[in-house]
Length: 151
Image 1: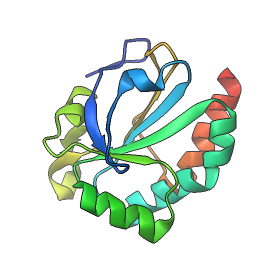
Image 2: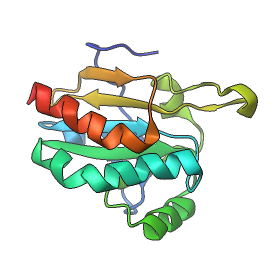
Image 3: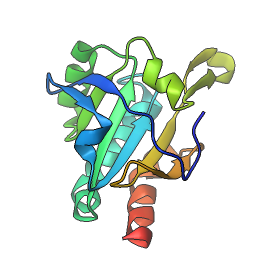
């Protein structure tokens, strides 16, 4: 489990662009690292579309958005194409990074799995904000508001 103010755990995960990505490549700017249960499900789609619709403003605030789930790259490709997602999705099939960030646990009637959590990481690799409770449809705007307040 990680906390605000701590150094964010590094990762090496394959992305929807066919490359392997790590935390250090986002140094010097904010990283909005969000974890979600599954591609192309109602809540996950609403959240991803919220980020899609806010991405230009988020980038103007000096941040990048990256989504992480256990879904394979093929699923990510279909999800991105179907909804015009304009940011990177990473695949964590073993759930190692998901667990390191504390984004794994009981999902109530859905059993154990990936939790909907977001981490805002500053340019030095420190976690500056954790969202444990996420309203998928408004999350992009919520993140934009936070970035504007720390900008």
